[in-house]
Image (cartoon, rainbow, N blue to C red; front, side):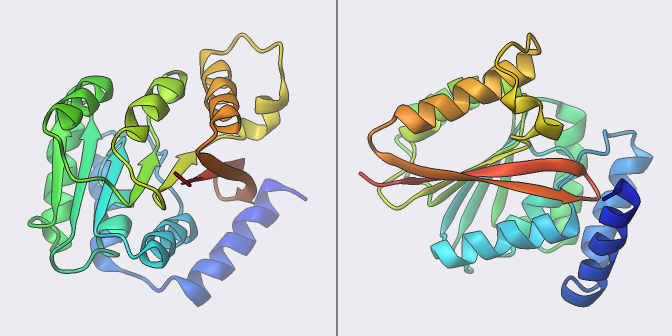
Length: 222
């Protein structure tokens, strides 16, 4: 199958299952106009994240990697009125765009975008003795995924769900000899998940508008 066919199928699913939404489309337009990388989740993937958060009954969500806030809007919409989402973004200008997009989506009071290296922000959250998160979405620099996993385990509870994005990388994740820091980071991230006695996990391969990629899903069991 070709990328063209994957795009056609994604378009069909989007038109049928993910109706047009002005706040989400505006977030993409503003992100593109500002020159942000076009690496957002697709609409169907955004809906998947929203459904996962709803299935979890999430009151508290942590996102690592905000970009322009597109996935943040999807996740934020899964929260109840008293819910809270904290998103970590290293780039201050990206964070500014995301805050505008979140406000336009009516999520300003339920979401917080923290600026700075994610490892520093995670350490700060731990120092604040923050309430555990029900769902964590990791979608930032892949070489740091192992470190992100180690930090977020201390910010979750039994039953929490940890979702990792872009773990397939067009199949390159299977290359044990890869010297690409992103591939090495993802492989170590998955190895740590597999080795951890209190995580139960799987990985889902996907094709679509973003090509060949996938998610990892890990549930904290104890």
